[in-house]
Length: 123
Image (tube, rainbow, N blue to C red; front, top):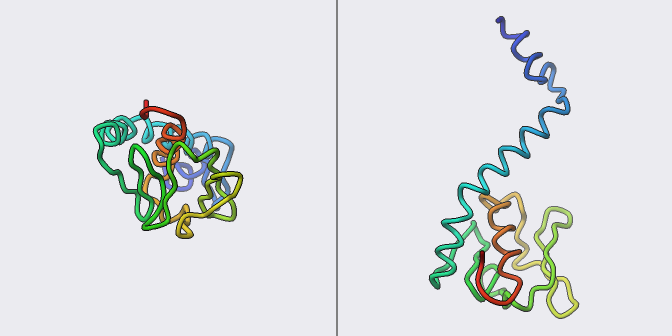
């Protein structure tokens, strides 16, 4: 197959993405998260620290640098204007202004942080 036909078959001709591309991204994202999350959970559950760029997670804390919050106090996580925000005690904070674009494996870190929000250990 020639190059133009290959690009068209992939849905990327002239930089235009078809519905298949976001689906492929979601599949890839899910695969990476499923592959990498168990190791991160194991480290955290054994009392270790997992770092995703500036963002760090332990069994008890989520944050960046000195700007951390107790995991059990984090009520919600969200991304606003490209920054990770956490809600603690009714107040939204952006730990050290962590931009999502600078967090390696962001979806792994977000999934792990979500699991750490409740009492007990990550699962």
